[in-house]
Image (cartoon, rainbow, N blue to C red; front, side):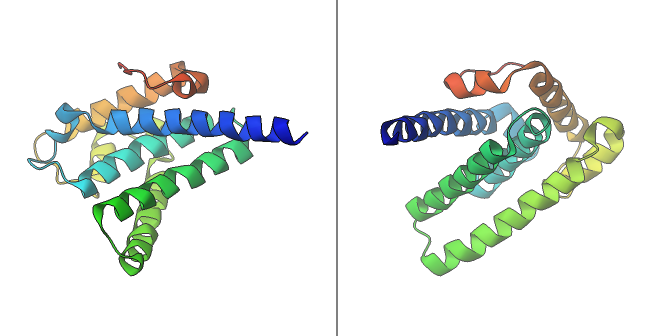
Length: 168
C-alpha cells in the first residue's frame, strides 16, 4: 500500500510541476507585459501569474476535486515562497510578502468572480486596480477574455501532461 501512496505523490508532484510551469509560461508573455509596463519586474510577473491562476481556479473548480485544487493551491504559493528565497529575501520579509501576495490573490479572485457577465469597461477598471494601464486597457481585457474562453475549451489534463505553448 505504501508504494501506491508514494507513486501517487510522485505523480501528483509531476502534475503540479507541469501545471505551475504552464501558468508561469503564460505569465512570461512579453507582449502582455508591453500592454502595461516598460519594465519586467518580479512583482509584475507575480501579478500576471496570479491573474492566470485565478482564472484557472475559477474555471476548473467546477469539475475538479476540491482537495486536488487545494493541494495545487498550496504548491503554487510554496513555489512563490521558494522564488522569494532564491531572490534573497529573509524570513521576515518573505512572511510579509507572502501574506500580501495571498491577500492580493484573494482580492483578484473576488474581483473576477463575475468576469463573464460584466462589461469590458468594468473589467478594465478591475485590471487597473492592479496594473498601470493607459490606452491599452481594452487589449489586456481582451487577453483575459480570450484566456477565459481558452480555459473553458481546454481540459485540465492538457495542463498536467507537460508544459505546452498555449495559444488563444
